[in-house]
Image: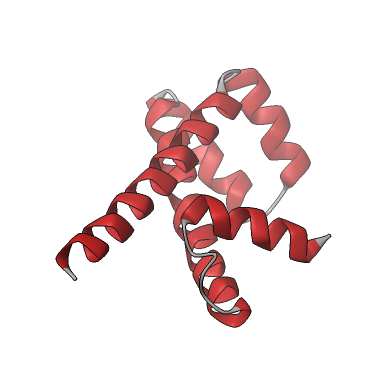
Length: 103
């Protein structure tokens, strides 16, 4: 199953021609970037008075608490996260294309 997921993500990122270890490394790096982008997008969409609470919950790594908080304070959070991730994938693909165009 994990190999299938890696293959699908690698295809989406346009890195499916690389070796498995290289794919894993890039996917791990992209995951970190996507998590940061999603967190920033959520913060930007939260009311200013709720941002400290969001940070406190994420610092505690309280997944259930975070879900409950977002359901109450930002019901559209899944779409916000999805858009942030899609934006990062798009930027990565554009970067890949720019590298190909210059070579």
